Each structure stands twice: as C-alpha cells, then as structure tokens.
Image 1 (spheres, helix red, strand yellow):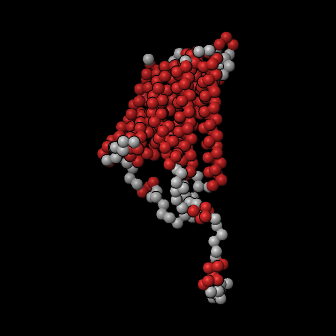
Image 2 (tube, helix red, strand yellow):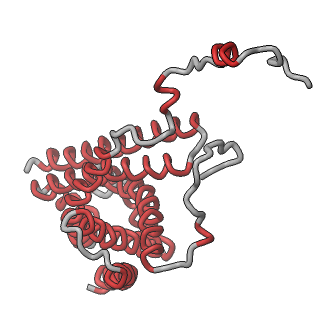
Image 3 (tube, helix red, strand yellow):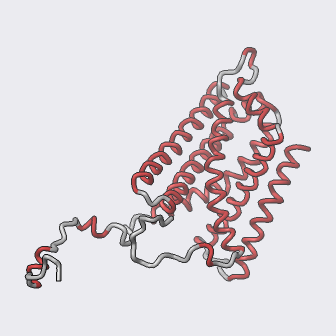
Length: 145
Length: 139
C-alpha cells in the first residue's frame, strides 16, 4: 500500500503530471525533420560531377607523375588542368563531407561526441579544399600561364 | 550503433548477423567502407599536392617533402597503398553510378540485374586497379 498518490483524484494527478517539455523537445527523435533531402540531392549532384572528374583525374595524374617533379608542376600549371583540379577537389570534399556526416550520424549515438565529430568533419573538408585549391592556384600563377 | 544507453522503444532494424550475405548487401556495405577509406586517402592526396606547391629546393629541384612522398610511393608499402586506393576509387565510382542509375532513370532494381551489377563492380574494381598499376608501372 505505499505510494504518495493514494488520496489524489484523477484530475489532480493529471494536473501534477503536466508536461513542461517544449514542442521541439517532444518531437525530437520521433521522425523526419523534412530537411534531409537537401543532403541527398547534394550528394547525387556532386556524384554526377565526380563520375566525370574522377576518371579524368586518374588518367591525368598518372601520366603527370611519371614525368617526376617538374612534369607534375607543369601539369598543374596548365589552365585547364588547374580548373579541373579545383573542380575535382571541390566536388570531392563536398561529397566526402556529406558522406562522413551520414556515417557519424549513424554510428555515434552520444550527442556530445557526435556534435564534436560533425564539426571536425566540416572543418576538415573545408580546410582540405582551401589548402588544395590555394596550392593549385599558386602553382598555376607562379608558372605565369 | 545502439549502446547500453539506448532508450528508444520503437523496433530496431534487424542486426547484420541475421542476414544472409548477398552481392547487393556486400556492395552496399563496401560502398560505405570504401567511402570512409577514400575520406582518409584524400588527406594523402592533399598532402601530395601541397608538397608539390612547396617552395622548390635550390636550382628548381623538388622540395624535400615532395621527394620524401615520391620515395614512399615508390616503395612496396606505398605501391600496395596505391593499388588499394585505386581499387577503392574504382569500386566507389562504379557502385556510385549504380546509385545514380537507381535514383535517376530508376532502372536495375530486379534482383538478377542488381546482383549482377554488384558482382561486376567488385570485379571491375579489382581488375581495374591491377590494370592501372600495370599501366603506370610498365608503360
């Protein structure tokens, strides 16, 4: 016979169990926020670009590195190669960022760790793009082409 | 992955061990595995291009970092990494096109085609990586 609610009527119990959670807190984790489709479209669009850019990159980089350091520099310095390289890096790092975000969201349940990794993922992808694009521009401009 | 602190009462999707392994399932799993591997592989490509743009050593010689990377790539472990990287790229590329075909024209869903394409992607990746390695080494 324990329990402090022994003498409370139904209405009083309902009033006491009032839910103070915000609507957002109640809805969280219960389904789609209807914003995921933009990632999906971004992933498909960058995939479409990479479907063309990756074969070019493979073929081109293999022929370039065979000629050693000076050959590789001359390859990057050619305008079309520089432009295509920056496009390849942009599409690839954008695609990677979305892909890794999905992996983190799937496997990391702990909210703090997940947030930290998602931020790190964004920083890594954008930093890699900045570093590679700046280097390509540097080589291209230094060559004076 | 659900840990000890999992409190959601809704049914979970069945775990990996209750499924019979199949080509389409393997292709889906390896798409994610190769994607994650390529993520870290891209760090190395970025390092290579940054080294290429570093200030040349005296007399227009290759920068020290670039020479080091070139030497590592020419070694046997380096060659193994390059072949594995090429296989991962080719698999992710071919299997990614499968996803694009599924999403765009929406064809290729019947089990026979889907399985056949999945097997093809694995064969394409392995043979393609070896072909690229042979072409880069001997031509």
